[in-house]
Length: 577
Image (cartoon, rainbow, N blue to C red; front, side, top):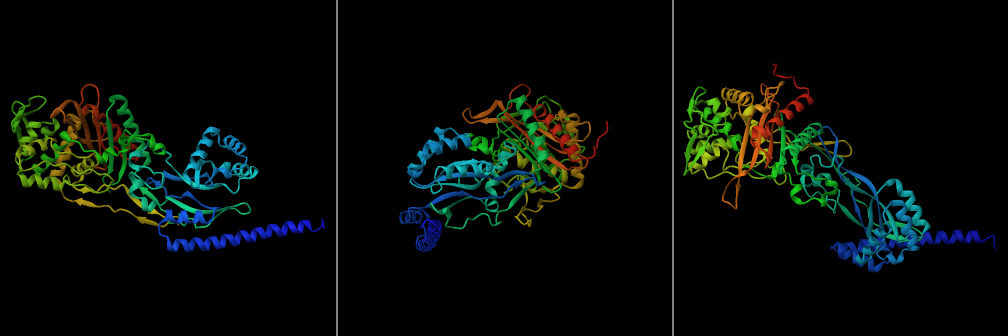
């Protein structure tokens, strides 16, 4: 009698196991049958849960590909973590106080918080995940606690993935973030959501005392369909731009800052920094305004940065010549019913000095040599009249009605037209190379086997915008702006920098006029100027302090940007003093 007891125990265990598997088999068949007749997932879950008390659903975040910089460094990645989920009714939890106390000891989460989450989940009426983001190293401790408290049939451990941004605020406005459902909501996470994969999958789970928990559906998202996406950003250059951005913020306490740098060989955006920024690991703590990619979504009147476009094009159309002298008189000119003034009267200026001293009067006089169609052609050639269609939320340029001559006058000095920082960067590059390159922010996608797919090509949108003769002239003129003009504080000991300062008053909608206190300051330029490799812009919106001009606020930081980036890439200095 006693000798047969072990055999009976084994027999009963096997019988339970076989019975369990038979139950699962028929449950699976029934689930398939339901799914063929019920198309709505919520309706299907409701029918299955009513039919089988031990079958419920859990939400599982799936693996998502990484976002990397051009050198393969992770900017956003999926990190494996553990979560705990519970049966729809917490009444099934045994030795509850002991379980909660042990869970608090393992996870360092207060007992009250664990109880709150369990109770909140019970009100949902469905299975629910009550703890997430638990370290993988705690798996065995959690498993032992669940078994020791006899909760294997109602509490489950699930490995899932949490989106992690290792560099936090760095390039965050560009990268974006992933929401609760595991899908990209902003930035590159949004733009390449289909390639990156991920998301949330709800799965039917059987919970039985003998079998533990068994998934009744295949888990998607682990089959190698996700891809890593490589951006054009270079993290080393991005860090340089971020550091300079912080310097500007500390000194000038502005409302916003944007820094953009583009490679003139291929249109690659190698750095794009914004202030304010945010930490995408905790995106809910930041208002939407802080999460915007201001370098792309915001447009400003570019001020004097527009002047070289008009003067170069007038020279190209033979409306003026390199030796032309422009009589700016007493430093004021009538536009419509108002007068536009220079900072100080300069009388007759060489054409080059109109740019060097940033003369409003001289630029307007030159711009008046172009007719309406020629101005339209200027905007087209420099791609100033339309979007690039590269970034999510990319703002469209705002162009005034060219039927009115006064609008052209104002536009030549950067008023009445509004452009984004990225737009200014790409168009200003044409003054360096004679061609407009489409900005590139992504290079390729790579699947789990290492197979690559190109996501963008070098695209020349406008070629031969200026003749070589005009191109050489405007380059030299912009070098002189930095060497002896309004951009002197961008002057480098090692490299020739060509560029233009800009300052624009912001229009006050309430007052119906331009504000004297609120300005946007700029410096746009390219370097090394004798053989241009990079073009960029620094935009500082509403700086605070004295001498709020582009030459004071933005120019010194462009020099730092140019020198640090040039040395980072090992560019040979083209200037010896």
